[in-house]
Length: 124
Image (cartoon, helix red, strand yellow):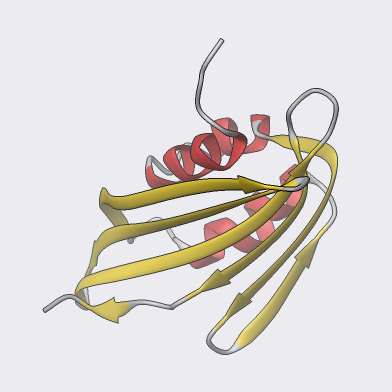
């Protein structure tokens, strides 16, 4: 048993680009919505979240070098988790920050999630 929150487990699995581990943090019927600088994303199951969203946000050429920052706070029946990645690809080095709000089912899996992404920002 881990003492990490569901949001922390999600962020760490995403930082490792361990999409199988990402899926295990989610309920089979997750209500997922994301907002990136130019698009709104939606999915209703873990496979779709990974295949249609997360693997598009961080494609195979994007190396997530580190999880620079992570903070998690619970309030009422929600958790807020913020995290920042250092990412390298053919275009250079970037920081990507995301803020997520989530709810969980009785088994502690994420069943409702809203993520806002900064996009790839040049690391200075």
